[in-house]
Length: 354
Ligand code: PMP
Image (cartoon, rainbow, N blue to C red; front, side, top):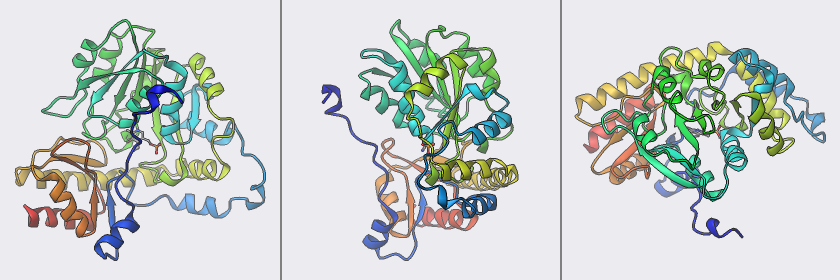
């Protein structure tokens, strides 16, 4: 075994809902810890999955996911050859790290940000440098990132909106940052939550300007397909060809391809979810403001807030059937924005504890 793997810790999610139900003798537990879509998924997905051809079970799926690829390219406005599809963004993060990183290379990530960037870099034997997010806004601090750059820097991760802070950096800031990054450093812009942001905030338009930048998207969040594991990256064609070689040949099963294709065809569902999420987000943020609870303004489907007794509050909420995410930063909790009733009850419980 490679020496550097021995001390790494696996990603640890919150306890399973069955475990929680059993522990606290609950009938229902609301998972507000994994940033899933509380509104389920599009009816079109349900139909497509029902009509999925079971008799194809013994056949390998289309390894190039042609139909889905064509639909995504049209949706995004890119060439099909610029797309690499993966088993969720988790797989894309892994194959990017495997493709681009050698031992001793440096990778820059925000602090805090999605932990898989760091874990995958460490698996490849790379060195991870942290650039603290703004303590005021939770936004990615590009000056801090630039000051971490050395001639060993190979890869920079921008999560926008950032998980767990929820904060969004406008495209103009990303553009200005990219103009200062040397061309041999790859900059990965993870837009897992971009559809929840107000207005069109994507950095995809910057890809024609910067060959060393790439944008990632997932079907796990607003499309409500977390269980199907489909994500993709849009990048310039040359490194993209290498990623195609590194990924597993039949990575996306045909049920997932079918579900994602149907989900993409229902942009009305996406718009509705974004609208409901924004309204609930506003209420939750107003609640934090009114109760003097410090939080970062979010453009995602979760809010990160500071609470002195975070661990105890999380356990109290869990006891009442509401699971939030802890352990991301001392004294902070991340709560996924749920449905209207769930949020109302969550706020009531926080107030009761407060
Ligand atoms: N990026 C970010 C910022 C995430 O929060 C997550 C999931 N929590 C992922 C990537 C991984 O998503 P997927 O389900 O597509 O693997």
